[in-house]
Each structure stands twice: as structure tokens, then as C-alpha cells.
Image (cartoon, rainbow, N blue to C red; front, top):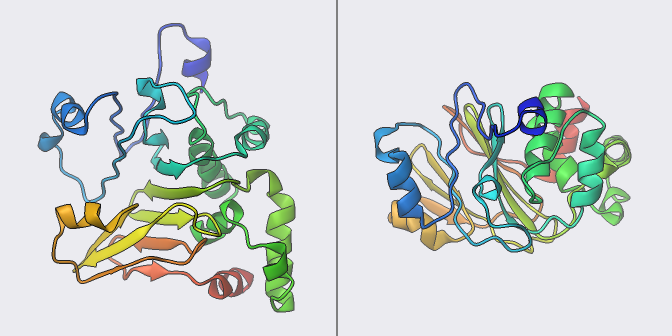
Length: 242
């Protein structure tokens, strides 16, 4: 933050200890060749390629967006960018990438690293249950859901979105509540694939064990060395309330 806002002719977009981010404007194969990605090895990769829609087309605005060991790729539009940005600025975050996805990277850092929330709860901040659904929850779960919506109302993400959030040892997929942007889950042995389209997954792994589409707002959590976790809303709130 300090470098990007206070030092001329200097810009940091990757600062992780166990993660590197490679950005560029061009065809995917050109970016891969430029950064010599074939020489890298890793157990977790995220990638994103498309023309910008509502923002400037420059290398800093290319996905993924990152802070420390968190990285975010996003499909869709975050219409709540303004209020999300103003809320994050209260905690010292400065948005300099000129695109809406940046707020997600900073918000996940705030919720998990600074506020010490589990990823399952952070997902419910981003894609909060509708008030009509909250009213039908059991009392204890309803109390937690109401509290999250009230305390973190300014971090609720409005608009159609699919997010893939990666961290050391884990990867999370999440869509908006009514799933206006697609998310497909694929598994093959111990491998987890998350993508907007099943066809993209099958280019890498044609013979999947399973491919399916999760419910809107349902976080899909893959952790290194652990079974895939698909978290229904009731178990999220019950588990967080224990």
C-alpha cells in the first residue's frame, strides 16, 4: 500500500511468501511464455483471461488480484465497489488497480487475517443470505446471520459474480446468491478444479470423476490433503455458532 501510493515509479502487485502473481495484457500463451511459467511448479494455480469490461485495460488491472498470500480471480461485476472501497479505506487499504475485483482481495485479508474469521463465515459476508431466508432460520442461526449482515453490511458484494479465492493450502469457489455467473466444480482423484465452464476443466482433465454445479452462495472449499468441502448454509451457521 505504502509503495503503490507514496513512491513514484514503483508498483508492487505480488508480495506473497509462498505465492507469486504474474500479470500481463496479451494472449494467455504469450503471458506464459514471457514469465516462463513452464519452469515453475506448484500444487495450486489460478488463471484468468478475458478483455476488461468496465475498467481500464492495463497490466495492473489484469487478474489475479492479490495481497500477501491471498489471490482472487473474478468473473462478473461488483456493483457495490464504491461502498466496499470506502469501508476498506477505514482500515488502511488503498485501491490502486482501477477495477472492482481488487476490493475482494483486500476484504478477504481484512476478514480472515485481521478479524480472524473462518473462510466459511467470510463467504457468508460476501454472499449473505436473503433477509427472507434469515427469517426462516432457527433462532441461533438467525442471530448469527443477522449479526453478519449488520456488522459487515458494507462488505456485501452486490451484482453478478463468481469468485475463486486461493491461499496457501486452500482454494475457495463462490457465486452470488442467485448464481448469475457460472461456477463448475470438477474432481479427479485428489485434484480439485474450479472454473466458469466445464469445458475448460476438461481441456486439462478430460476424464473427471465428477463434475457438478453448486448452489448459489454455497462455498466450495478445497484444502490440501483434505476431502472436498461443500458447505450447505445451515451447517455454516450451526458450525460457527458452536
